[in-house]
Amino acid sequence: MRPVPVTADDLAAIAHDRYHHPVPLVQKRMEVVWLYHHGQTQAACAALAGVSHRSVQRYLDAYRDGGLTALRRVEWRGPAGELAAHAATLEDYFLQNPPHTVAEAAAAIERLTGVRRGPTQVRQFLKKTSGWRGGGSATSRPRPTRTRNGSSSTAG
Image 1 (spheres, rainbow, N blue to C red):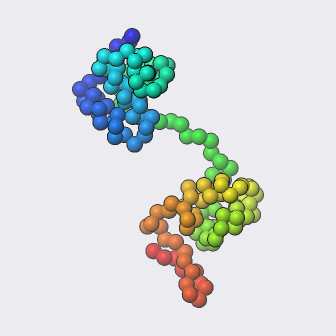
Image 2 (cartoon, rainbow, N blue to C red):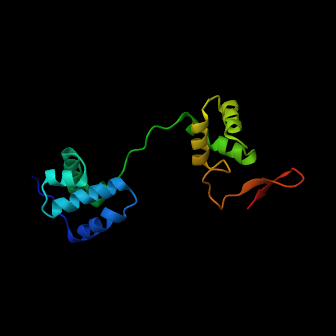
């Protein structure tokens, strides 16, 4: 076993982050370092934290080489979709012309970009870009609304 010295300040931060960090993966990493610091073997840390022995080694190496910053770093991003390149244009379009259904939004996306997507992908895209009134949008962002006479105005 390689020694992994933990400072008192880091130990206090680890104790907090094991339960309060917003990313579950970081919580698990902190738990492994916490257990190892308190005398558990790498095998016991793996069993108690529910990770592989190799993960325990990676977490301990990351802490030894980069400290808490390395443990808190989460680099997985996932692949970008084809619609990501058109996100700004589509969001502007949908803010000016809010779709009433997902099918209507899918048809507009295909017409504007040439990219055909099914309802689930369109719904996820709209929620992510907040260009749909059913999506999780910011409340402070002005949205176009229809007035009684049918004209469009921006609500603030």
